[in-house]
Image 1 (tube, rainbow, N blue to C red):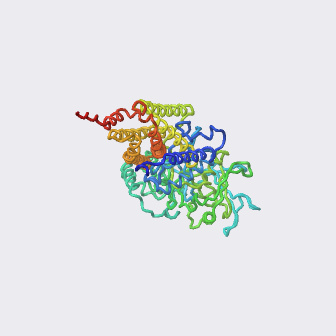
Image 2: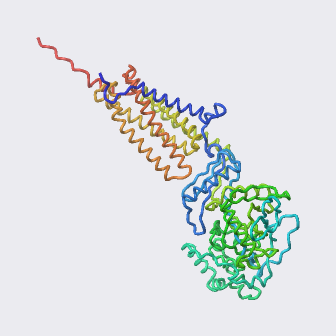
Image 3: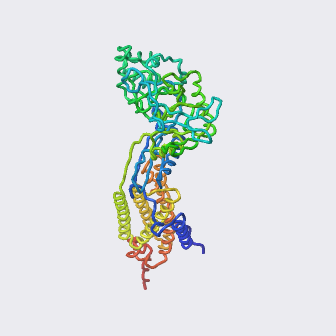
Length: 633
């Protein structure tokens, strides 16, 4: 005789569940596991449970405040992750959050991660003009004296890596060959008359790129702030103003000295350079990416003292193939630069252009002590060094300066992994001690334990024998979830956080609902007159649809929450979804088959033992036959 509809073979389902357990815990103990038994059974915990460092970086493309593209943000995430690993930070997690944030999490230890998010937007720009950057002086800085022989110049220098017979400062012919860069003196500038007589023809005009609407609106706001007379005076300047020759001009341009760095950043480059009341104190603090556009002329400062008008960037940080911190012949730390194939060609062309001062683009204020153009190495908004080109460079080069080993290694790491496509500002940094993390872990486990205990107490009180089914189901679900957490932590880096523990506690309520639905449906079947053995499969058929619908809604909610949320909320959604899926596995492969086995026992027929309550007595009363009447004689 065929089994009733909906009845399955419980032995097969339990065997499948056993197979899943065996495979899961084989992965737990042997897949990517090492160390002691405790180490093999330890899931990957988040920094809120074991302590660590968490830092949020906000990305911006430019001063217009627009968020970066998804591709640029992902590229930046990969570069930052490489920098974190290069600094010896193990098991760090670098993820994107929203459309402009990158979150760095380092469980287990506290350390400063600020440097890993520095933009390191390297640009090589020819120096066109120089002026005083104090913000108050009327004339350029005084003439310079050469740096002491045998010591690096304070502003740094760039020299070719010695190769063969080429010396670090050998001058080459314009036709090619290896050459050198002589370090420029930090105050190498011409006389005041040279600065005052500069004309626009001394430098090529900047690329006429359209100004974004948001920047144009900010410029109008700045114009209103400084006033029409000041704005007209600044617009009419063709060179850095000599305030000693025209004292009235000083009063007109004075409002520019009150502008914030953010307001200075939206001004045209010529205005930033020509207005003497705009100083390096404002220029150095401009927002990240203020001068990142390689197609535009820009203004930047060196040593917070001299400001320079710089040409378009002919060589970018992405043209650098490799960078290493090494000791030079004087035992000073330098950063050795190795350009890519295409980048080397750009670098050679730039040094040739600077060495020959093609088109007389470099003003007298921008020339070095040997009368040659200088090339500024611009890192973010500041000039790292501005060495004088001594020849056409066709080989590797060096950035030298007063570097310590730590500084040189950090700069080399930033350059080695490429210039970030966007720049960042630290928004939040959180350090959690190991003691506080352990306290959070104990509190989370205690909450989970109390929740499970309350469910079990209620189950045994209300369902009695059936409560054992609930108890065993919760234990099996907990073991499946624990094994999955260990495996997922190794395979995809999933970390268990307090939010994840909260998601699992919520899943206990979902599991309890499915028990109530099944058992109450079973009571209804028995009240309708069916035997316990036949009521079990029929109740399962009727309750199964409701259980699947309820769990599907919970799972769908977890998926939507995971997709649209950020940060620790994702951990909550992932844990809730994982626990819900595993609960369905237990429902189908354990709860129904074990109930089928229980239905065949005598204890299941006892209302006091089974927990079916008044359902069995009611059924017995309905099925009890009436006494036949005694036949009359």
